[in-house]
Amino acid sequence: MVLIDSPKGYDAAKGTVAGWLYGVARNLTRKRISQVRLDLPLLEEAIENGDSSDSSFCSGSDPLAELSQAEMLDLLRKAVLTLPEPYREAVVLCELEEMSYPEAAAILECAPGTVASRLHRAKAMLQAKMRTRNKSAMCGK
Image 1: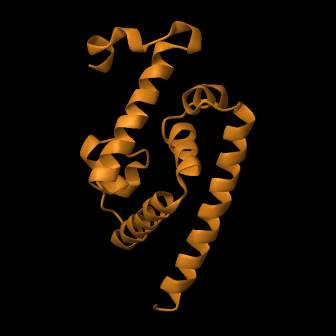
Image 2: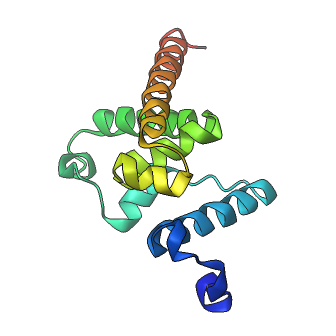
């Protein structure tokens, strides 16, 4: 709708329409998140959309495994939300949206190497957070 309402806002010299639209969507999302924090669990979204890649997970064959995986997904979702914005954006674009570094770099208006660096640091932060949370959960804290 932004493109239809304001076609002069897009400049072909600055990049592709898709990149511009991702930037618009990112800015609108940032604005919305600052107003109201939406917090939908990733697991519920995948089940509702039928997008689960592990069919045994949703088959109900092992309730303990399902519970463990659900808890891990919840911890991971919470850990991603705590990442600083530049790192969170790199994770979302490259891991969830499966964009290449150059595609993500165009949207984030930075170099592909910067995207790779942010993604590497984000993964390290997530691993540390997950280790800390797993230790806390094991100790009953």
